[in-house]
Image (cartoon, rainbow, N blue to C red; front, top):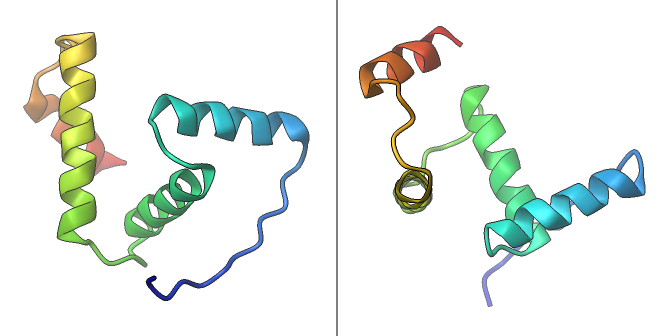
Length: 87
């Protein structure tokens, strides 16, 4: 078993907890994995996190799967990248 660090999370209300459970279930993830991934992604956006190739590959494969499910989004990849860089 890998070493892990515990983090407590207090939520505003039960509805947020329910939304997190639903979102995690839609992705086939545990609530813990979903929250940990969301926090890591937020830290990366803030420049505090470290990019992990495994996590990045997992994210990219999930994005590919989602794109296949929903089809083209009607916006070129270049436009999406430019918009992401402006944020």
